[in-house]
Image (cartoon, rainbow, N blue to C red; front, side, top):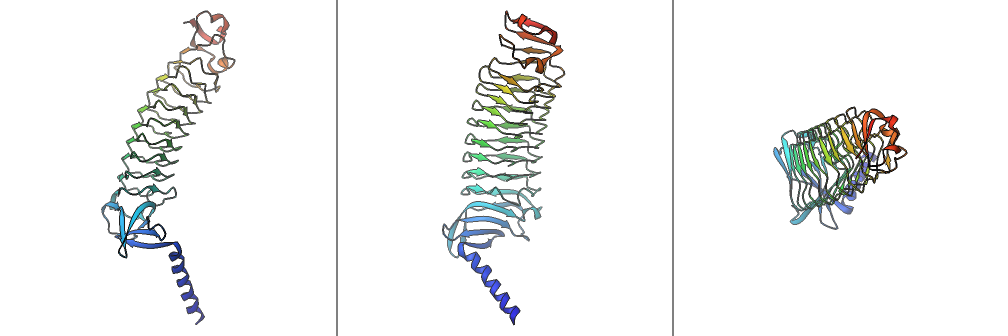
Amino acid sequence: MKRKIIFIFCAVFIFTAQSWGQIAIYIDEIGYEIDKTTKEASVVAVAQKATISGTLTIPATIVYRDVVHPVTSIISLYNLELHSNIKSVFISDGIKTISETMSGLGSAKYIESIRLPNTLLSIGKNTFLRCASLTTISIPNSVTTIGDHAFEGCSSLTSVVISNSVQDLGGAAFYGCNNLVSVSLPEGLQRIKGSTFKDCVNLTDIILPNSIISIGQAAFQNCQKLTSIVFPEGVTTIESFAFSNCKNLSSVTFPATTLTGFGYSAFEHCVSLTSIDIPQSVTSIGTPAFEYCDNLKKIYVHWTEPAWWLKGVFCSKLITLYVPKGCKAKYNADCYHDIIEM
């Protein structure tokens, strides 16, 4: 008798807990939570034994007990990874947020395409982490932020168009997207954060918008097919390891007046670099910033007085140093193959 009473009590408690603020239901094999105050619905799961095949469509509204509820967020797509027959996800307009803690989609290795809604405001941290079959993605104009690691490990992703509305691109957002060839970055973006494109080994084309002011640590590390980069006027810092091991990088153009420094090993192992022109605005360079750049033979500097750290960075009998007219005697000839006045 006691056991039966305990069972009945627990069942009532669970039902009451759900009814306090939310209603949990399944409609057409998709699980939702409905907020009893706002009447808005959030996606929380795909049915474990769902029969959906081809495209999973997240609707703009659902009807429950004759009431229409707008679907405004995706909290989780739990169980999606169990359904190999689902190849694409269509998210209808009306959905504004995708949770940073969303589970299911990141482990759904079968998903090849995802349609994002034009009402989406942000893409949360880890949202598409390791969606290994995802080939393309277009970020709608409504999105203003992309979270850290949002597309990390999307190994089949080949191209990305990021709308001009995006003002904040998270660190490691495209880390390890090893088939990514080209990226269009938005005007207005100010910072490329740490490891954003690290290990994108097939990235060949990147154009930095004029709004960029800093390049984060290891932002483009090991982008081995990147051949050239032009830093717009306004860039102030290039942090440690930012372009290290970019073995095919042969052309680098720095801003003439705004760049103040390079971090530790910023261009280490860039073996295709043959010459660089360092602006006069630079006040510091991390000691091994250009270490193991074995073919770097010509360096152009614009200081009338040699920087105290210059010898530690570039002292090599393989290098010809080009200096301002009338300043050759001020530079240490013992460090270089030759010193030539411009």
